[in-house]
Length: 267
Length: 315
Ligand SMILES: Nc1ncnc2c1ncn2[C@@H]1O[C@H](COP(=O)(O)OP(=O)(O)OP(=O)(O)O)[C@@H](O)[C@H]1O
Ligand SMILES: [Mg+2]
Image (cartoon, rainbow over all chains, first blue to last red):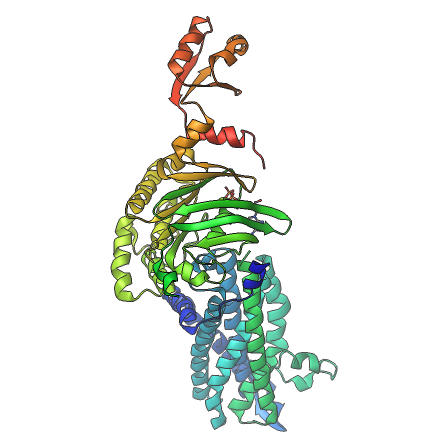
């Protein structure tokens, strides 16, 4: 009884200890730097192929009461999607292998670094990597003339927020997934639909009324809408709502992810 | 408050009525043991006996389900970080970081333990020499042989200069050369005053390394003592191993109980536990029983182990 009560006093995460995980991942990427660089090109390829290629046949997209050229509409959507991709990779796939295959975390928890440090460290790494790619992509947007407002200065913090919230969400998947086959299921059933249908490629106003609330509940919708508001300058009160959604998601998902990871690692 | 740091307990680990449950399953059942400072202490036992479960509780990665446990005078649940800072863990299954090189593995663990770089760097060099991985420092972990990986895991466990080293089956799966190298290193650590806790199912390993050991079986500690103690208690000094024809077996069966303290009939051999194997063998030959082969050997911990835990697989 006494022991059961004491176990509830879990250690809090420390940023210093969590930063060691960030260092570890950076060290690992020294050996896989090509993989690191390739992460930058994916959204750029989409932007070029779909935004400028397909965009020629599209004309304008109804947006904020007016018309927006398709590439300007798509670019912030691709930026949001790239934070989702990064979050999945750094918050789910890579931790999944460390947890279940390489047993990296089993080793780390024999040191003073604890499970909440590990979770915070992995999310921090995802956030840092997402931010680096986001910065690169924003420069590409600037060069292609797809940034239409000084509000875009806030786009980088928004990318950080989106990366943090989405990777904390991805860590929840790490905490509940045991089979490697689940990775593929998550990709086809969750990620791909999110990628295509969250207001990334076309505006949510195209959906029939009963589908809209579903789309508007997804995190990628909020991420894409927030970034689009900032790069186009169509900022309003609704923009703040996207921020609140992502902040709340970040906090709740982090707390839940830590609990789930603890359940997986301590038995 | 000051006393808790200065009064080093003579017993580094104390367990009383320690339990571990996994749901309904009792993995460790009310065990009592004490590990003294500077000794090499062994947990011996067949598969599933509860050795790893016990080690993980000591290492503060698995909360006890009941009983009391003190490690270096501290509570493994509320003072886990303090304890972890002072122990080294060699887990049963290697969990080296395969995305990093040999040296980077040690560097990272120095960081996890928050060891300043100017202390860590010379220590890493020293540890790489100690486990003889000089040629492999910049190699990735994956291509290393099993023995090298094990040695790297031991080096990793020593990065924080621990007072207590927990080794869960340190040489399982290694070839004889690799095992002897590991034994030699562990022996040196003991000489330096590091307290070792070792689990193993190799009796020769326990005999070589352990000052004292407990035998676990089905979640309980069934006996405890030093290797010579246990041999004296559970076995005779010598064992005579005979290979016989079926006829000779039958003949021996009628008189064997008078010739030895205890006789064990195995499919391929007969074991006679006796104080002087040569005398027993002579008596057997005198009674006209022919032997294909006869071997007199000292009794080992293996004989003790098999006497206590039986020969059949219990799984
Ligand atoms: N995390 C766990 N969840 C459920 N049961 C477990 C867990 N870990 C161990 N057990 C069970 O507890 C019992 C003791 O296992 P343990 O690993 O401690 O044995 P062991 O003596 O180390 O065996 P081995 O020599 O095979 O390593 C076994 O029945 C095992 O199946
Ligand atoms: Mg074990």
